[in-house]
Image: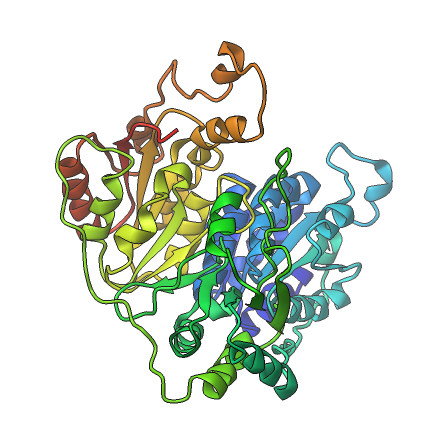
Length: 517
């Protein structure tokens, strides 16, 4: 058994049985070893940003890590933007990054780089296997490290000679670190604040955004009158009919200021205190209302769901959660607009769907339109690095092949990782991508105004314009093997969505929608 074989066998034994990959020469022994461990599924991506984003989407739905296989420092570098999003989502991922053979590094070959420094930027776990004997032990440690609460990115650097060398052995799985239990005194102190009669808001994130956590927060709010919110960009939010509908904090600082207006106490569980996404001249960065006190019920690595449940028993015993009633918007008619396309989504969303949401400015009204739709999960842009939607939808579909995946995708962001459509076709994944085509970086048009930039004339506007020439997403998708259509009216969008949901495999709909800004 060589090092690569021992690595893959150890990964599979530890529960990691999917590897999203874009390999090169230094990883060829890993590629060859896949045939000796048939339990490992290899999924090819054409660009490393698609590979890492898919691993993120897989982790968010499967609640366990996939592996990635990346080629040296440049391959890891290409994947860093979506690894940044994964880090912010606390997604468990095991990166396998090939490196030159140990004896070859001194020659400073063209692809030589500081992989350790690149991996360190992710603030996760990093290890380099120097010998064949270390590979399996390091692999087992990497899987455990990735799953240490609340989840993180583990990067194992694999020199080529440690991969091809003989004498490898497998290593037993290592138990990851479980979430810490919140002590009773902390829960009691927060309960006292909720009973004080002063205005309180509860802000949740992480695992608290699943049904059990949402039910506990809803009970707390119903019994005490506290406001309750989900963090702006949750990694995975369960919602729809039968689940408590908890509003997300707004993206704009002004929205958050309005939502938190008048509170005296902010209780947080599984997230951080809210801050402005960017700095703006003359506006605060810290969005906690002046004079309000912050109380941490549970840190991100603690058992936030258990703490919320315990808190609910103290302040809301006998109180039932308020569940979202089933409802759907009426199907609109006429040309697509920023206001009506979301009603088409809400009216047609299938049962148990997964929404990978990178609608950006086009999706501001989406939460309202889908609140009473059948139960579904929403995956959001946790780290703000655009180009996440198509890859995350891809990984989610690999993790849950029996669930429909809907990627709501702004046009500008789609172009970062659109090659991942090929992976959807190659793997025959049930992903429906709706391109929200407004032919502009509309979010940047908004930000140009908000930062107070002076003199935004034709040169500035040209840098935010995606027309001239207009991109043909139907042809692009078809060229990558994905059947595609174009919708200009609400009726066309509804009809094309129904057809896409009914037919296995990937589909793309190019929805022509005017910009909101």
